[in-house]
Image 1 (spheres, rainbow, N blue to C red):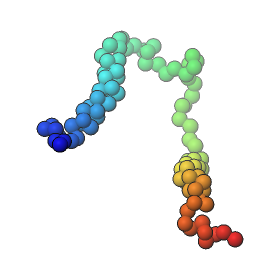
Image 2 (cartoon, rainbow, N blue to C red; image 1 turned 180 degrees about the horizontal axis):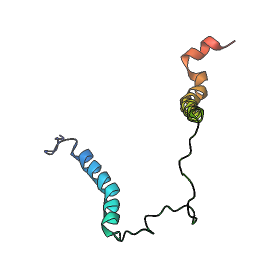
Image 3 (cartoon, rainbow, N blue to C red; image 1 turned 60 degrees about the vertical axis):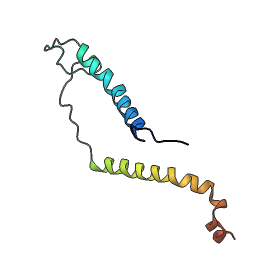
Image 4 (spheres, rainbow, N blue to C red; image 1 turned 90 degrees about the horizontal axis):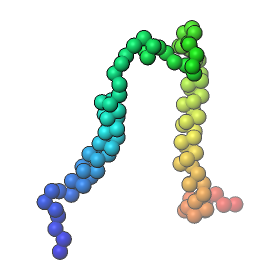
Length: 100
């Protein structure tokens, strides 16, 4: 005879969620707390591969590049879902309709 624990069936999941949050936030909080706090003009400068930056860092891209990227991602995700279907096509019931 099994009994449900007094603390509830989802307590283990809540405990794992809290542990995951602490695992992620703990090192970040520790690094923020231990980091040296000595701001200055040299530390606040922009750093690009050891060279002083020249000109404006903002470059405008054409909207078409973003559209190409979005279309690529959409078709890439579609292929992820179509590949298992294509592999199992001969075993599916609808494949009998397409056999010559």
